Image 1 (cartoon, rainbow, N blue to C red):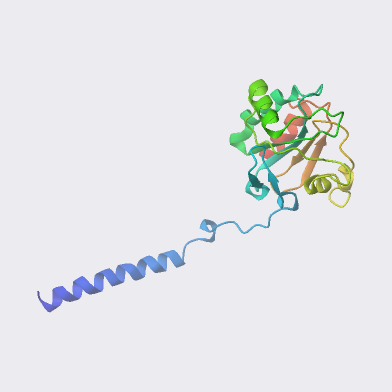
Image 2: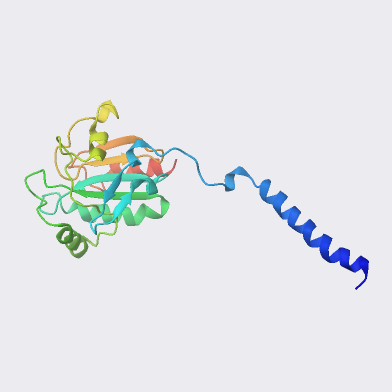
Length: 200
């Protein structure tokens, strides 16, 4: 092997490596992971119906509809509308989060397994469902204390009045709308509000 060929075999790979390192260092900031702070409403870990802990921060950047649910309520049929809404807009960034609650007329008496089976069998629910919680009073889940607190949103503060109240959360974690139980998932006002947030 000649000395000239030896230098080519050693110097060229080293030069290529140096170029690759320089290109990586100059990569645009947009390719780096997001460093946006997690909104207060997503700083919670909640148990799912199947017993797994779910860090709500995984939904950062999504439009959320948080709903307290029940299986034996006059509004229970809203599960169908919620599922339809989820199927229509989930690929655009909507996530519906269901939180069973037994505080209103004892209309959610079942276990997590029973609730999961009921939702799947009767309404084909595929959006995330969580373990049963309380939404009012001293025993309310911290998430719902935040959602209903005056310090969070004075205009929409106050206790949950019944099953299937809905909180619409923007991509940046702000409560932008609150819909009472009688507002169905396919109601024009709710759908337009969801679409407006998804468009941002």
